[in-house]
Length: 115
Image 1 (cartoon, rainbow, N blue to C red):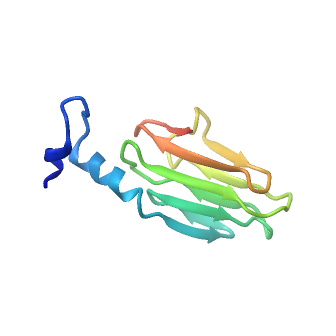
Image 2 (image 1 turned 45 degrees about the vertical axis):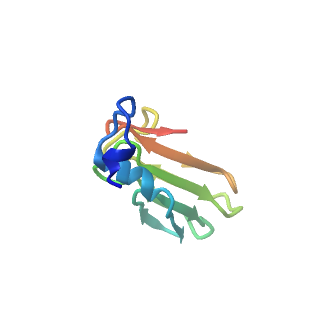
């Protein structure tokens, strides 16, 4: 069955967007301790025990891309998420300060949003 066979007129999604939705089933989970350039579908577990962790959201994202970020340590250091040229809820970066605080980021290709 081709992707067109399951799309209805009300779906209004492209082939690329359909492929992006299907890839959410397989997630890339990684533990980061300093710098991370996240890819679509990433789950970033940030350990800031040794210092600030920088997480950069994907460059040139596709509408609907999703990245999850969680701070997993109890230190006073932060996890700073950057939009790679796009804003995150109208700010250039977003800071995560507390252990087990987590956020899901998605995009319309113009901005990143926290959902």
